[in-house]
Image (cartoon, rainbow, N blue to C red):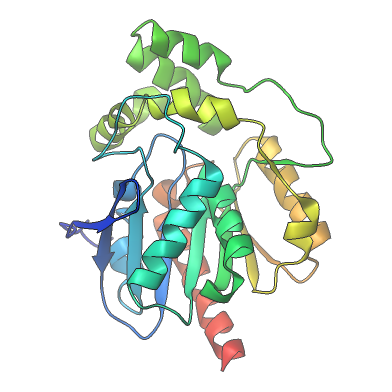
Length: 276
C-alpha cells in the first residue's frame, strides 16, 4: 500500500465562507472525492495516492468540517449548499469539462446533488454505500438521535462509538486506528447540524434522469439499508454498474482500499473511453 501523502492544503474563498481542500497529482482528467459524516479530506488517505497516479485528485473538506469546524448547528451545513460549493470549486479550478465524482455515505447524497445541479460538470458518478431516503418513502427518526443527546451532554467518544458502530458494525470504534478517531473527534459536532436534514430526500426522478455513467459500490458486510439504496438506484438506472468490496463493511475504502481503488479506476477509465 502506498504511504499516505502529506497533502497540500488550499483555501477557496466563497461568497459567505471558505472551502478547504487538497489537490494532488496531475492528469488530463480529475476526480472529486466527497467524504461522508464525521470526516474531512483526510478520510481519503488511501485513495489520494492511488488515484493520483492517473488523475488529478480534488478532495474538499465540506463546509463546516475540519479544519474550519465552527459552532454547530449552522444553517450553511446542508446537502444543497455543499453541492453548490463543490460546483464553485470545480469551476474555479477551470475544470469546465467536468470531473469524475466519488461520494461516500452522506457524501454520496452530496455527489448526487452535485450531478443534478451541474450535470455538465459530472463526467461520471460513483456512489459508495449511499444511505439517503427517496422522496416517495416515509420519513423516519434518524438512527443517531441518541448520539445527538450524548454530544450535547459532552460525551464525545461515547457518541462517536454509537454512530460508528451503527454504520459499520459492532466494536468498530474500539478497533479504529488513532488517526481516524482524531478525525472523527474533530468533526463530531457536525452531527448537530446534520440531524436537522436527516430526512432530506433524493427525488427518484433526479436519479432516473442522470446522464453520466453511474457506479454503485457497496461493502460486502455493510448493513442492509445501504444495499437497499443501491437496489433502488439500480432499478432507476438500469445501466448502472455495481461492485461489492469484499472483506469490508461501510468504511470499504479503508478496510479494502486496493479493491475499492481498482473498482473506481476501472470505472473511470471506461467512462473516459466512452466519452471520447
